[in-house]
Length: 400
Image (cartoon, rainbow, N blue to C red; front, side):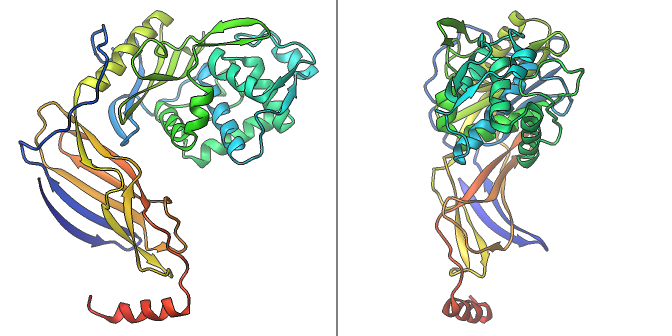
């Protein structure tokens, strides 16, 4: 592999460009071990899935997209936003999984036995952890409403928090008018691109909570056993969630994910005509994502890929590293050169913390979907003291 380095600085965005030319015979790491799937990998036809998106969230590559920005009614996929908000509150120490919440008269009146539920009754006291299990794995509408009112005081206050959190992570095409996705004349809507972003953010920021609550085969509460209707979990190698959705208004939707080795894919299907078709499309679509590309590793975890300038810091620069190995998905037989760029708002302002996400590595090539991988600071950079400022000032005048 041949490599060269070019640097260019723009007015507000510091941009480091690296050109990586991969020779036609460049070595490709052995593929991760995969269990054979008894199905034919294929893209979902437009007639069956008017909205479809498949993304490698390990590197941000969009492997396939059909109408990724088209707004649609998510139905119970809405509950993923409720789960993410709850995970954020738990991580902040504001929501205790062992806290008890009560089925109030208002929630009982509005949500008793309404659609999929946990069979909660008036006055029932439920642990938050049980509500989360019910919401994630048996799509409990009553559980979502109890959680919303129990934490925020009212369901509308909870949905306000859902929308604020969605906006904060960049979900620009979504609005949530309920905590569970019950039909509301189209007031709740989202896009495939937003759902992929939500899934990626949830998994990346809350991996332990994701594993703890999502992707179980079912849930037993008050002696009533219910199964999880996720079409991949337990049926597809590497699948571990996330959520199905259905109403007559929405059709059959699915936000799903699977991981094999260091590669994690997230898919969205929306507007599918029936549940059986959704299950078939989901399995074939996900298998297509894992098998239709040549996966090539470029950098090991922790490799220094570049540097970012730091303003008013004890050091003038900080090394940039990926949190995991950097790999890309190339179309079979792809031999065109790859171009990598590092973008960051710079110079960075001290203090900078080790592990803080400060830059983005983009890898592009003709005929290949771009990959975007976050880069973090390798080490802390403290605020400059008087001596540091003097040294940095003098260094700025020297020719090195």
